[in-house]
Length: 79
Image 1 (cartoon, rainbow, N blue to C red):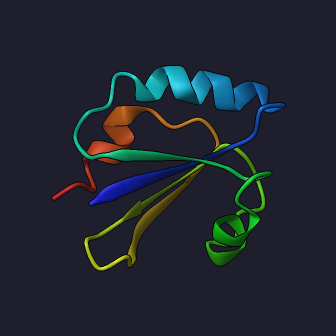
Image 2 (cartoon, rainbow, N blue to C red; image 1 turned 135 degrees about the vertical axis):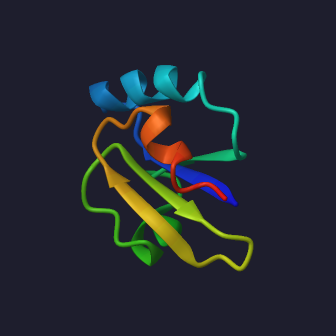
């Protein structure tokens, strides 16, 4: 599993999410700047920030989280 963390430099809540993710080590986290990687943002239909998407080893979406998310909320979906 892997956690995709969609963010942007101008997004205040994204900075807060980044700090929260420092407490999270259950799965690898890939940070994706939506301004630099619009293709991936479009692939996952990212329309608001911050957005976290948990994907399995096959690349399928397990769960999507909108807005600030506590690591404990994510962990319940990690196998």
